[in-house]
Length: 117
Image 1 (spheres, one colour):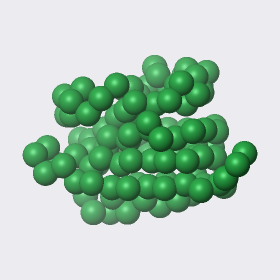
Image 2 (spheres, one colour):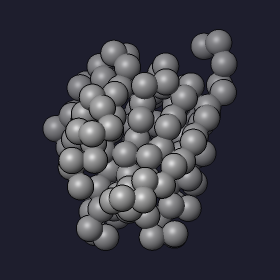
Image 3 (spheres, one colour):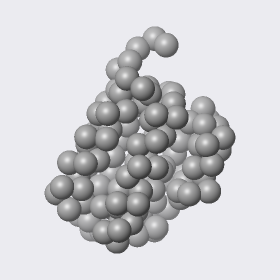
Image 4 (cartoon, one colour):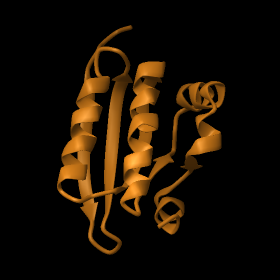
């Protein structure tokens, strides 16, 4: 791996109360806690409708994918959801292998993601 750098940007989309999270870099055993904390902070603020843009995620490990699995039920308990958007081919392959494409809605673009809500 070239770098462990991982970035999270958050933007509240006012029209539907959805938070768009843009992730970039490597989501793995070294960085998954950053994502856990970011999602926990959003939940504390009452944001349970999340769209996670994965277009800039170069690699995801099972630990990284586990964050989504671990937070989905809490989002759904509060009438929310977590939608995974535009994963790279590498990330989509990991999701397929782990069965996440059976659990999560995986969409290609923001209009499709917002349509889920």
